[in-house]
Length: 317
Ligand code: PEP
Ligand code: MG
Image (tube, rainbow, N blue to C red; front, side, top):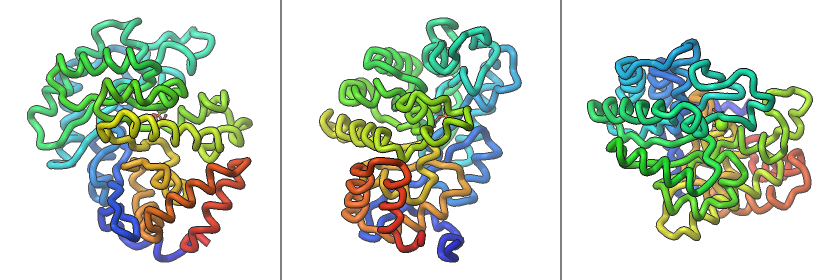
């Protein structure tokens, strides 16, 4: 490994020409958040709230939820924390929300869709989030997982507004959401690309199946095209709403450069990758990142896209 990748991260994600790319952390609870803050994260780009309650077979109480969320908010006073509402199902079943007998859990009632099968749980979660946010200094944003249509985005935004939460957003992790991002972003304040599921659904390859790992690769040109399309939709919407990435793709330094080149405004990742991503970003200008993204988009395979990007990034040689 290049020794410059191991230097302590100073908290800034910046290209060589000073274009800011806030580097945020993916966390599953307060303990992760404290570690992420110590590692230099500028905030939380994804709080996976289902991780707070994975062992539960009943819905957590309001008090339990407020305590869990406040523990994360308190680690980032004055900073952005993007809380994701419960994403139960498929790889993360929650007995109080999901049906273990579904034949195709990844294509089933998961994420935001459980609002229809279990009415009330989402409203109660949003009320708990609002209470926890009210007593904290964090800048709390809220997003829904597995949004597939502009109508779902509108319904979620209305629920957030009703709960007193001012910054509603959605994950873009279903190809239909990437394709309709302009309409979706008319309804909400921001989008965050979940490249783990976006790759699984674009390639029709179960992310949990080892034999499909070659398909399940966020360097797939089809996935990069959907990232490009999502950003283009946000630009077409016209009010400058941010599109971040919170999938594992953001933790791959060369891919992080490609994502920035495609116009993504923030990157959220596991805290241990922050320093390496920050170090590589600092070696390229925004224009170079855009050129590397164009190159990667023109590749015919994930291996070629990755090789071509890395060839332009001497720090990774
Ligand atoms: C994703 O799908 O990319 C994502 C960030 O969410 P999760 O991995 O929790 O499904
Ligand atoms: Mg996901």
